[in-house]
Length: 150
Image (cartoon, rainbow, N blue to C red; front, side, top):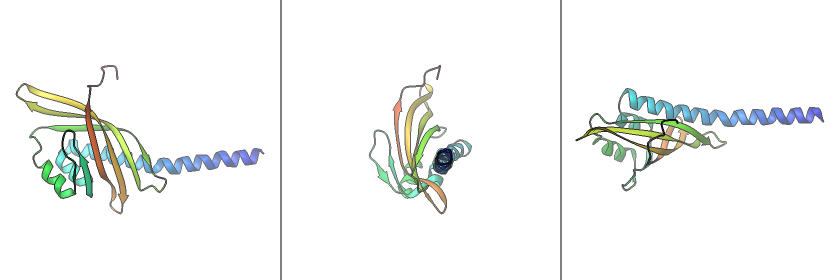
């Protein structure tokens, strides 16, 4: 009985580790995506990490599809504006090539009153192919500013 229990526990641990690896890889891709947006700029990061068939769901606007359309839309990115985000968690398929991440974001831009920030949350759906993880869907919506004690 002890051998059966030990084998069962070891099997569960192996399966858990196997399923955790794709999630960790996908979260790393999301973190790298955010780091590129900070290091270079937001339009370049979105162009680099979006799949050719990406579908975007911008808040308050119509959805659109395709990398070319994304690049066109991001060409009007406000000068000096930043978008930073922090992935919180994710889920990956057991196949290791599909999943989603979610997190929070801060958009900062200049307006007539100076610098203004808005906050929100997002979900990105990812697909892994021969070039690595690419997001195929991005959905964000605004929310309240984080509490000071968060």
